[in-house]
Length: 347
Image (cartoon, rainbow, N blue to C red):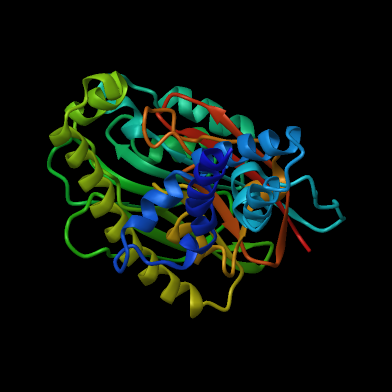
């Protein structure tokens, strides 16, 4: 029994540490990234010990119970909330976010029409696409026409590996007044774009982000798929190194975006592929002043990346306190990411 208690305490420590991950910059302490990534594992073990001690009628169950309860914010970020917003008579907007995986370019497929069909079915007001490839005939104008969205802002990255123009795009049914992008500095393959949009004469600012990718190689993915039986020390070190480097770069990107967000006077929409799990520095910084549409629009564990890792919710739609989320949905489409859709309403 004493051995079980010791294991319980050891397992409770990383779950307790998850409470602080949102405010620990990986640049200063990179292990916080791995603590956050393991949240669901720590949670599962602590639930086991909670039940184990409860069945034995031992007060030791309080160790795991208290540790779980103090993670209430992380629990909501991962599982949503039963508390739902009440619909009112004020105007609604619907926003879509999707990493299109270059519309199937590297898979030698053309998923443009399939993705257009899925987006059109949502009847969205604003569509934010990451990893978008504008390649004739399936270019920006083709999408604008098919989606019936006359306004757009496309920003291309300097990338000579692909035909056409590769970057990020925001489509809108409503007039775009201003537009721009956040430069992440040296070439990373990631960026952030923004637009000021007029909706019924009310200006809002919409950001679409694609934060630093882990950049696993094909070999790394094969190692992850094969599992621990065939992994060697060098392979493991390489995978962990890539995760660590990406987390540090993302933290710098997030800090730059948060500085810009702090200056804004307009209502904010923030969405995109963050390449980050909910228990993370990135998520914690953004949700200091923004609401996660998933929490009030969904109940249940969600994974928006369909690949082997990171098989977490890494795509998000967030909004300012001027809105409430009525509906949040995700759907598998022709991409390695799910399409996420949120219906928001003015308070």
